[in-house]
Each structure stands twice: as structure tokens, then as C-alpha cells.
Image (cartoon, rainbow, N blue to C red):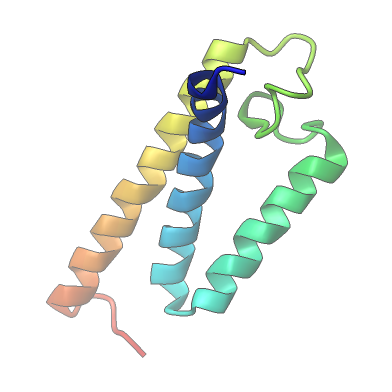
Amino acid sequence: FDMRLIVLAACPPAIYLSGLALLIGNLTQNVWAASAAVIGYWAFEFQLGGTQTQTLFLFDKTHPLNGVNYDVNRLLLIAVGGGFMLANYAVYRLRRRGVILAR
């Protein structure tokens, strides 16, 4: 098997879930909340098979959906995950300035 293909397939969902975890962890200041949210989202996606998220389906490589372009799916996962990371950075900066109070 070609390891590059495995890594390329796994990176977009990992970026998306990492960005989500960072943002939720920063907003709640609770690593358990961030972990629970990501695990819950992953389980939600796995159980419902992308019927609710469609183009943002995490498992499109192994369980492709009809009418969902694989390349668009991967690009959106990366873009939204990157957006989560940028939002996390914005929350971090606001918290450092005292606009958002830490616990």
C-alpha cells in the first residue's frame, strides 16, 4: 500500500477535527469539553453516514456519498478546519487583551 495516499486521505478530517477541538477548548477553557465535542462529532458522523453534513462528511474516502465531489469535500474540510484555527487564534488574542475574560 502507498502510505502517501493514506496520509492524504486522513489529513483533511484531522485538520477539521483539530481546529474544532482547539476552538472549543479555547472557548470553554476545558480540555474535556473539547475532547467530548470532537468525539461526539466523530461518532455523529460515523453513525449518520453524512446524511446531515453532506459535503463536510469526514468519511467520504471510505464511504462516498452520491452527489458529493471528493475533492470539494477534502478542500472544504481543510478550509473550515483552518477557519476554526483562525477563530481560535482570534479568541486567544481577545482573551490576552482582556476582552474575553478567562475563568
